[in-house]
Figure 1 (cartoon, one colour):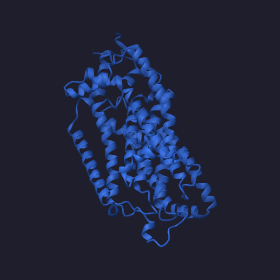
Figure 2 (cartoon, rainbow, N blue to C red):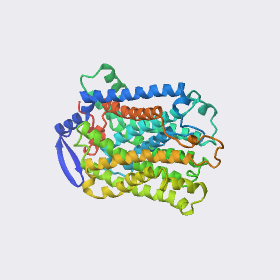
Figure 3 (cartoon, rainbow, N blue to C red):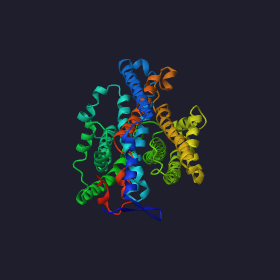
Length: 458
């Protein structure tokens, strides 16, 4: 076996030894090897939030008319659907940060790919949970499968969500197989059931040339498949709105508008995730300032694209100011929703489009602060899409209390929403405790001369 391994960083070549490679493997396996006190406290906190959410859901299902008082015939879609759209958007992080970068041969994606893929799977799962939370009769969920009508956009959404979950899960698992073999061979003092899990899930991986050939081909096929499915899931989600009779949603721009916003959220979410994982697990050598610089450039690009589709979405109806469109736009521009709307525009689009143009603001900490504002603004943007759009129906309901025309989420609703975020973070956290969150072999592949040298250190 070769004692030296070639690594390429930009245009600089350097040689490092087998011992240094083993050190790299040890560092990437460290989060799996042991969990500290603060890690246990963090997991415990997330579990408590999830338990509160389950209890709130129990209250909702047993006393619904008393705890979701703002959900009426006017606002039949509340904060749960805003949350659903947010998680669907966040799930596109896997398409953008893993699939697109892989196919376009941007080598810097390698330490980021698994982070993006696990967030994508967790987000789409919690999108499904948000839909169940919004249902008045979750016991009838299976009717969608038994009696669904293909002409219904809801059935389209179910089809693409299930398909996307399946492809994203497989795309996460297939590249994980060599890492499972690495865990089996190099982890120590772990429970027998965990070591057995690694052995079973690695499917007898030995790192032979034929296995590598099959693995790489499978990953490429799945990578190609996940892009149209990922774009379709958010396009179909946009169609759920566009095919409903509401003034704000009467738009042929909604598909591109939703997808561009999802890509912006995906980049911002990736920046936050990389910063936290980098600090928590001391992976600064692998998640470098170069990655933040590239992600900052991507944030600028996605911000300008999203601004373009927002101009398309609002400029034409604002120019005409006709009918219910005028009422809705006035509420957004100068009315009761104006502070929230302009806050989203400034902090969620304009600032991330301008500030990262300065290289100093593409450093890890300042860029992460900018990304956090984008993530918060993205959730509020989905709220503004869902809630105000329901306030102006084409056929207003007669003789109803004025309170029916206004919506504010209850404590029970917000507790359930908080629990969905805690559940997503819990999934990602637990994943990092059982599997390497930065792919050992993908990082190594960018540095090794031969794939046969990966994983074969016993």
